[in-house]
Image 1 (cartoon, rainbow, N blue to C red):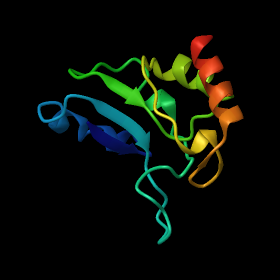
Image 2 (image 1 turned 180 degrees about the horizontal axis):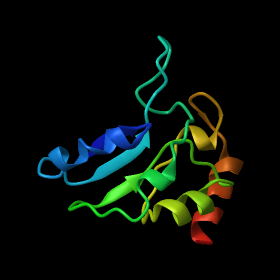
Image 3 (image 1 turned 60 degrees about the vertical axis):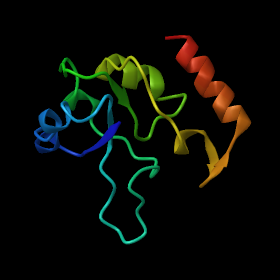
Length: 111
């Protein structure tokens, strides 16, 4: 799996180079430029329209700032068939919230 950090259209140029090396692509929000920023799990979304209607030679997943509330819109806009969630189901950094997990799964099942 290759995680591709996205904040603008220029970030999608590199995707072609990963398609021969990775079995799966994961589109995530580019982390902020702060010393405390993590490479992922920052709870940030990117403009899903940047990947809407695009086709790649590898399967892909959507990640970045997904919550139960945002999931339907994210999938509708991006066309994602698979998603990844982490901070969107946390009560605090690193602390998963069972109620948020249930809500996220319910939202995913409803799609």
